[in-house]
Length: 192
Image (tube, rainbow, N blue to C red):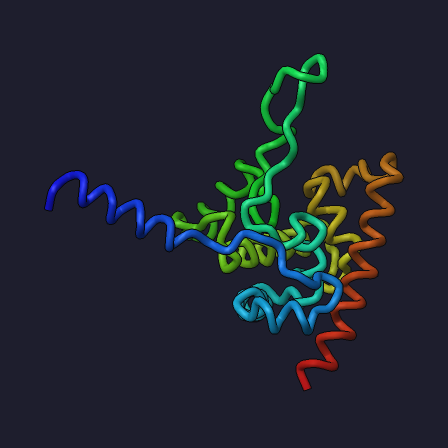
């Protein structure tokens, strides 16, 4: 096979194999979301079985972090308002996992091929992180508000109470909790 033909086949396969990184249509209805993207809920159910983190808690946190956009990134920072200075952080993917934390997850779980833009890996990561939060900070798996605060601030930041100085973050954590409760009610009705 010629180099040109090999390159053309490789490009075609790569273009077909890309993930669906766009946001689902209705993010406020867990049942509609489950119908539109059943693979998301299968992934969250696997993470629930492995890490004991309820689907509705995972869904609310993923909503807050990325709105279910698989290749989500933080915005660019600009010097003088026009000169790009790189991204605000290394957060990437469904779970907006930082590089270092993602590497810790890969090492501890042995899942070296895990990718932040794959929903299966992102939900497993989130389950792993929430489970560590239970162990390190004593926050129940079901406490979406405090789990989100620990997720955002890190285990040490949460233990120090760094979130108490961030009124905006407290408001966001309340929104995550409200969304988790809403998703739980919705999922209980559509799973029957």
